[in-house]
Structures are given as structure tokens and as C-alpha cells.
Image 1 (cartoon, rainbow, N blue to C red):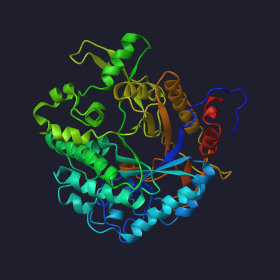
Image 2 (cartoon, rainbow, N blue to C red):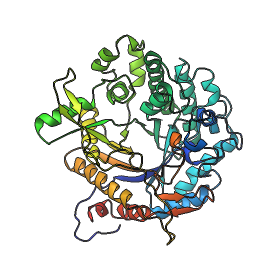
Image 3 (cartoon, rainbow, N blue to C red):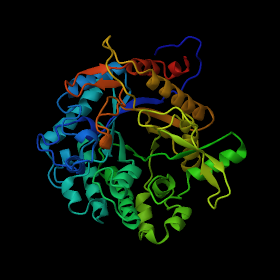
Image 4 (cartoon, rainbow, N blue to C red):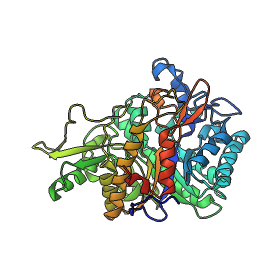
Amino acid sequence: MTKVPGVKKSFPQNFIWGAAAAAYQIEGAAATDGKGASVWDMFCRRPGTVLGGDTGEVACDHYHRLDSDLDLMAQLGLQAYRFSLSWPRLLPQGQGDLNPKGVDFYERLIDGLLERGITPWATLFHWDYPLDLFHRGGWLSADSPAWFAEYAAKVVELFSDRVVNYFTLNEPQVFLGLGHLDGRHAPGLQLPVKEFLRAGHHSLLAHGKAVQAMRASAKQKIRIGYAPVGIARLPREETAEAIELARRATFEVHEENSWNSAWWMDPVYLGQYPEQGLRFFGRDVPSFSPEDLAIISQPLDFFGVNIYQGISVERDESELGWKAVDEVQGAPATALNWPLTPDALYWGPKFFYERYGLPIIITENGLSCRDWVSLDGQVHDPARIDYAKRYLRSLHRAGEDGTEISGYFHWSVMDNFEWAEGYRERFGLIHVDYQTQVRTPKDSFRWYHEVIESAGAAIFVD
């Protein structure tokens, strides 16, 4: 381990340092070797849905460049890699017979990680829903939880001799909110709130049924989590009153959209929908039974959460009792115009740990920059390094103040297909030239290597 002179601060001894990516965003080979179509393959073919008419057909061609990409991950020094499995690559129709070549790809990915000393962390669903199942109703179908549980059982039957750590769903707020309410993501639906919430309930049931199926089918004891978006509200100042206001605001449901935490977390971790959310959505709330909630709230091993930003709040005289604080004109923002709010990695984990009591793993955190290869052949991305330092310092502070923090996965290991934003947004530690598929490690790649080698001490060096 690299020692950083003069720095005594450290993260917990067993803290996990990783990076993440998702199947549709990097694999390409969208119709290769028996892979079935997903809703994203359908969505990308619809004119005007993705910036520049981009698609995930080739993406980073990771499917064909697996070994060299794994070598780069080893060079980075990753302890863990969070990847997603493509449901339709394994099960082309979403159900039924496995695709042998799809199985072989993930066998080689998992074995390649282990050979390089990198622990695999597998996400079962990162948005590429099988198109055949979508045509049978998708998340609106009452059969969707059983479909997902069947898939989950097959995954652990295949891989649980080597893969111990799993996530079920990634960001239901996004694949449901943007995919089924706003229509800006696949499958491009604009459903009434009532139907959107119905699809959401089915996705939560799918999570719970998958956990049951995975534990029943695993070849050894496995660890399971879930990776929603953490919608963190931040206090304007560190007074008891302001902190309590931010805590309350973090768990309130007050808009007819998916952008809240409690609706997607309370059923999973507490076995109940939030009372305030039930009142807010009223007659649009889907019917559910105590048995549903018992299934959804299967015990989990850690609290995965994706946090990129937070919103400061202050008290006001409205019925809600608080409002978001307007951003200062010209405030720092990422290339995607997401605000720079490092305190989100302090208050978000703190509030979630207080409420749910499980060790926190940051399953995604990072930013998009306008990166390019410079004349010297390198990719200089000081903003990414500065961003990660600030956020990781806040996460460290949360740990020092009593929040149990267990890991951090930087998003993402390489530039990739950024959904409706196409290839414009670059989140990676590795630059990808999409015309040549040449990979160029960025300055942040080398910096993050030092962070991992120093067990986090490098983040305290200015």
C-alpha cells in the first residue's frame, strides 16, 4: 500500500474501492451471438430519442475487447468491479433457454476478474429489459416479478460459485420515471401516474422475489443489495433545526414524479410504503397486500445507493414547510449541468444509515466532463480529480461521524453510451475513441490508482 507522507486519515480497513459500468452502455454486440433485443435497442431506433441518433449497437465494443479492458482494470488497481448482466444476452426472450454464448461471455468476464484479483459485483438489471417481455406487458404486467425472479435464479445457479455480491435493480427512479412517466428513456412510455406507480410496485415485488429466488438457488452464501438513486437534501447550515429539516425533506414525497427516496426505499428496508407518500399519491396508489410488503422487504446485506448531487433546503411558509434553495448564479456544474454538491456524500449516507441501519456502499458517483486527447497524447481531466476528492472527503467525514461506510464505486470505469445523451457525455476514468476504440487512461485513472493504493489517503493531498 502506498503511504502518503504526513497524512494519517484513512477509510475503514476493509473499505472496498471499485469502479462500475453497465452492459448496454459498454458491451455493444447488440445482436451478436444470439443476444435478444432489449427495450433500449428498440428505443434507439426511434428517430429523435437519442442525441445524434446514437445507439448502443457498438458502444465500447467491450464484448470483443474483454481481455484488454480487464487488463486496464487491473492496471487501475481496482479491488472490485460492478458490472451488469444483460438479461436478453443470457435469456434472449427473457425466459426459457439460456444463450450459451451469452453465458460464456459472462463466464470469461467473471473468471478474468478473479484471475486479476478483482472482486466481481454483479447487477442483475441495469435497464436493458428484454423486448419480448416488454411486448407481453413489461413492468406493467403482474407476471413481471416472476419473470425477473426466474432470471435471477438462473444467474446465481450459473455464477454463485464465484460471484458472492449482487445487486437486483439499478435506479428504479430512472428506468421508471424517465422510461415510463416522462418518456425520455426506454421504453419511452408516458403513463398516467397511477399506471407508473403500478409498474413501480411490480418492480419492487420483482426485487423481493429475486432475493428469495437467489438465496434459494445460491451455491454458497451470497450478499445481496439494491441500488436506487439517493435523493439527498442538504441543510444550509449545520444547526440542529436545519439538519432536521433536511432529514425530513430527504424522505418526503411531494411531487408527482419518481424523484424521491422514501417511496423506493421504505418498502425494501422497512416493509412499508411511507405514510406521507400514500397520502400524497392518494387514489393513484396501486393495490397491495401485507404479503406483497413481506416479499419486497427481504433482508439485505448492505445499502447500495447512487449519489451524484444533492439539493440544499430551507424553511418556508408553504404547506410543505420547506423549499429548495436556488443555486447561486454561475455555481460550479458538471458537463451535464449537475451541480457540484460534495456534501451530498456526507448527508445522504448519514440520513440513509440513520433510517435504514445498513452499511453504506456508494454504488455510483462521478461526473461527465468534456474530455479529449491532448496534443501530448494524454487526457487531462483535473475537474474529475477535484470532484472525486471533494466527494470522497465528505464520505470519509460521514464515516468519522458514525455512518458505517463500506465501499465506493466510481462511475464509470470508461467513457460509454450515456443513454439519451448518446456519446457526448464522458464519465470514464478511461477515454474511449468511439471511431477507433482506442482506450486512453486519463489523469484521473492514475490518480484513482493512488487513492486505492493509499487506502484513500491520497484524497487528502491537495
